[in-house]
Image 1 (cartoon, rainbow, N blue to C red):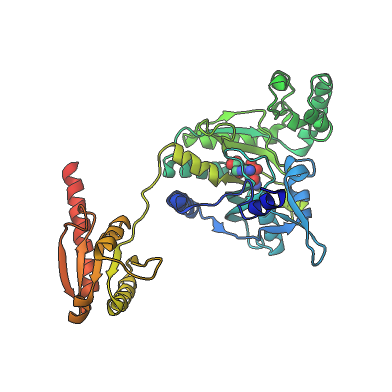
Image 2: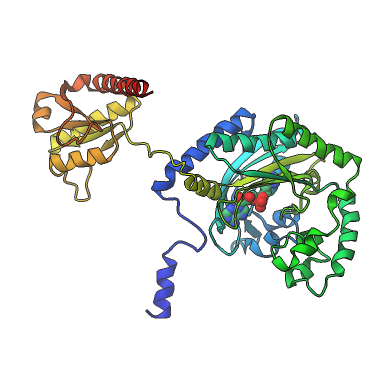
Length: 452
Ligand code: HAM
């Protein structure tokens, strides 16, 4: 293929690192979304939706100029129509804070907010790391006490429990306050300068801009150096330590196991005091399924009245992958009724009957084909069986003439061959189908009781 043709063919494919969610995965995503919504309701969090695009400066100021995200991962562009510098959001906290300030949401007291949606980071794609990925995030704005740090961690644990996820571990650290980090930073730079000859390029670049990140290195040659470096926790004052202990006390009282990881620093600059990550070993290198912490200075830094804040975000793709690993895939929900019909007049009656069944709250699929012809009864019944419906409603020429419909129970073996079938007057169809569904559910429950 010529280079032009290859380019043209590629242009019609999805963008690298950006995935489609296909129907086969929908039950998993919906299971996650349902569990998340009910967990968030249980803690009194309210939803906020912000645009996918924000001014680039919001993220530069919010996330920090010397972070990986701002240095090299943002999808930034100039709006060709008005010259504005814009960016596809790489995370949700900066935008949630922007919106809170812009709409003065804290005027009548603190707020608990949540959001979900696609985020964009130009990273090297691999399992669990994508260029478009989805986050669920929660932000508790205006609360200073360690109780709220603990609350947002308990929320995560509740979600793992509701989803049936086990073996997700919690790592915790405290980054203290700015002046404590400054004192630690000075010592750390002195310490790191002693290792100039073994530092890799990335670490050398960060030595004076973001030395804490040097400790976050994945480079095996630097692990020992990082392990023996001065620890931030030793520089924390009384207040910071009391806050950290407060969080731990509540977690322990609620039987939440955790490990303190003094090297946990996170990749965004806005944090102070508590930071945490939830990690699994089952997803390879990208095992962090959620991360967050306190970011008290951010609201003021972005132009709002000073107000403390903390929150987290989780990577939905990683959680979906973990659910799949753990074989927690729910059954795809089938429809209730499949409409089988033959002939023009019957198709019309079938369409009307389907609308009445939907009025009654049932999920109904009309038989339809690529060529617009309905095909044999036998082939339609095969489709009905494959649809997962509990009943087929069959309307042919005879039924149209007699003003009736046949209702056939499915799932009890092969629909084309057996299963009870009843002729019902068209006017009684809805009532009959609902009655038959209730009977079928009761019979199933009795069977389950007998088995137990
Ligand atoms: P983050 O650690 O950058 O924090 O991202 C949170 C989670 O998003 C990660 O733990 C991971 O599960 C997922 N994630 C990040 N990048 C990718 C990627 N390229 N592909 C797939 N999943 C990914 C934040 O974004 C902060 N805003 C969290 C926060 C909220 N802190 C306070 N409030």
